[in-house]
Image (cartoon, rainbow, N blue to C red; front, side):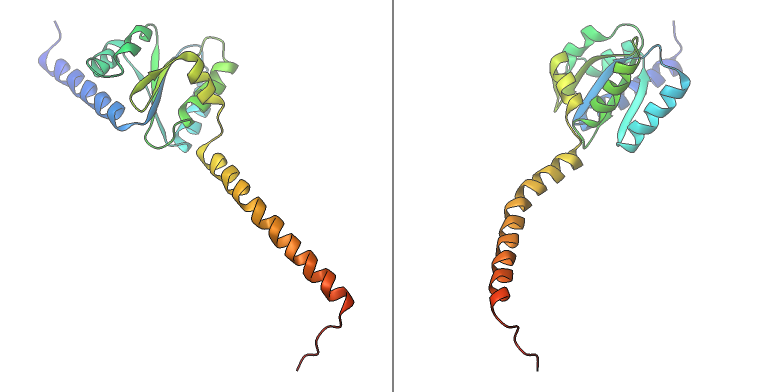
Amino acid sequence: MPSASVLEQKKQVVAQLSERLSKSIAGVVVEYKGITVADDTAMRKELREAGVEYTVVKNTLLGLAIKDTSLESMSASLEGTTAIATSNDDYVAAARVLNKYAEKIESFNLKTGYIDGEVISDDKLKELATLPSRETLLSMVANVFSAPIASFARAVQAIADKNSDGAEAPAEA
């Protein structure tokens, strides 16, 4: 039987995990095995730079953290070695980085994930992983909006150039 202090520590871990999951907008659970130290270090660095919190967790503690929540159906995936990556501000960062390593390392697999408190299917998780980052999407939208304005500016400039070709430039005072 575990001591009272060990039980209290586990309760604190479960409470921290519960809070982390409730504050995050997206998360991915992976089967954490078969990854080399070098790959693990590089992956963790990429996740940190993307603002993703990544930790290896015990299945029972994660199971307790998601019990009686909208994420409870993820408990079916909690077997073997498990790690969870959560993001508070980017829907695709965790999935994108982890999927890159899952494609590279045969035994490192995406198990399940969630967005805005709803568990998503494996297919949606893979689709999410292939989406560009938020910054890339925003720059794409900005380019779409600026293209008509740039075309209009070029047309006005061409008309101005054409009109100035036939007329003399005004004298400067």
